[in-house]
Picture: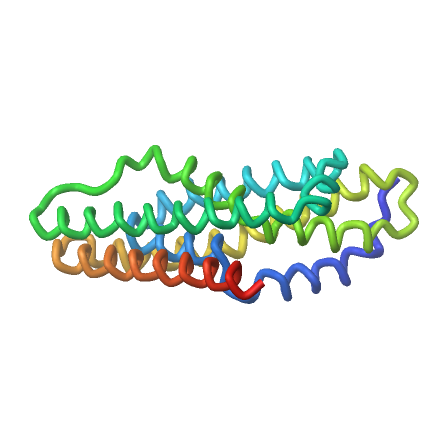
Length: 207
């Protein structure tokens, strides 16, 4: 049986964790600006999938491997930063195509991109490793309790960051008929990707 009395404190910790901008939030903002509300929904479902994979890994005990080998996490962060730079390059190309009247990226890729951005954000697995064991409470089965806590975290991020992506999508919807405005939104998204990648590289160098 799970212990639900720990949820108020746990939710408060999640909100503190989700507040500072990170790869997932920045990606959702960029997707909303670049693609609109529907791509934002697909992207957040991808992010939720990636988070669920991390949560399942921690519950299964695989998180101990990541804790024992921090270089693996650094490699994942570098991969994620490089992917964000690639997204910046692709987004810039879309901006240039928008000016010339061509369409952007195929919408079916938003979900997979969301999964990749999420699984290359090792802060998620570090959060699960550090926080989930602190909220076992009086649960009879720690594994089931951690699975429940992981599900709550995934749901909260999907709702909060999904709202950010959808809200950003309103700007895209209002300006979609203007090629110049669409290009501007794509350039903004490109800047977000580059700034976030630079932040990740900076954290690695300063670590």
